[in-house]
Image (cartoon, rainbow, N blue to C red):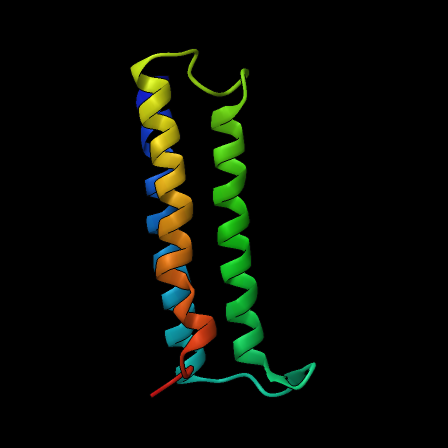
Length: 106
């Protein structure tokens, strides 16, 4: 059972982060908060922080999967779980970066 968890944790966390960040964007577009931080709208800052938190969680998962204590010992499960961890990091960057680069609400 732990092997299955090691294989699926990064993609499932990416799915949750993707849903949460774009859900937050929808809420922020419907009712944008007032104020700015360092000249940036508060909504942009909140989305940037959520992107950073999602990326930090994915990197932490990858580090845990590489560790001896939490990672698989060796073989197929280790290879697949590390691949899933790497895919989680790349998917997080690829799918959540647009909240930083594109217009907030259209």
